[in-house]
Image 1 (cartoon, rainbow, N blue to C red):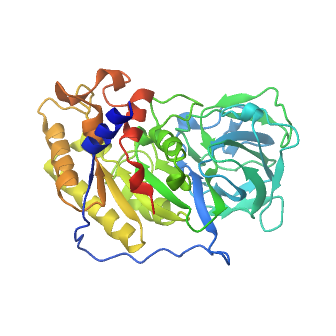
Image 2 (cartoon, rainbow, N blue to C red):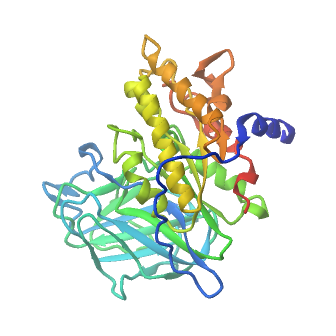
Image 3 (cartoon, rainbow, N blue to C red):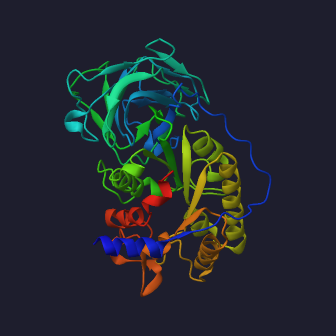
Length: 425
């Protein structure tokens, strides 16, 4: 099995020399403060914030006209990558139509340590403060970061975040991440530290949460995954944390040389690189979701299928290539290594137009990714999951049935195609 996996790595990943990227290098982002020993903040969990669609709003009675989550407790689970004993929480109102008043917040260990459960273990709840206060109002279009929170969370474990909103948010425009693949719970009243919630309404979305940072030694760094639904995990197991970035983190944890690599997911279903799609495009969100994260050392770009499926013309292919070059230039200016992943097949899906122009554009983009020498390394995800007998289609054993998204076995294959050595220092 080990030999087979090594052969897969060698076939799927080509380490390239860094070529000239052209263009004007972007200014490096402001670096987070470091401790006397070089300790620093590192992103250890993220979710891409989006404007919540009507179909993904909290159900009644938690949405009543322009009043959302009035007198409501919201309990959510996040999957921490690199653990530690000091953290800070990011709350987000970037798409909110009104200020977001958080009356109180806490973190705790979920019952059984599991994802997607409503209970917490007795005695583990810790109050979250903001500027020394238990409550905070997040301004419209802004994110707020909590005070450092002294709580021990092991690597690869789950953490419960509970928010209580007495007033609620006075707008039907709120910030969320719809594709959480993780169950959250709503209930009426203040149940911030209750070990058991009753009368709950489950929703498979995250609301208002956009990140968790860990205070970590200088050698610890984050790898950001920039992508769409294939990275967000459509087709993965709800509450199973088996998206390919989760699988990658689990593999990296097994070796001492990469146990300090945090893997953070900045993807969203339906997202596009250039235009259209769901949420802000990758081009418009790059500075926030990649350069704006703490302690980033690596970036994997695996996005473009929604652009090609929507309008797979030569112009779109050229636009994607130009966007990738922009990503590379900006990331390199910030000292971040950039790895490019080829776009996986969509033959048989509605993205596959009868004239074959979308597939031709995919081949153009993938050829550039493989041969341009612009990325620091290339992961040939296309080769990993395509059907050898019909390369424009996914392997049936990896296909969810829509001929675009992967099942857990397919996502594991993507994670297994990335060598440990890409993330050593």
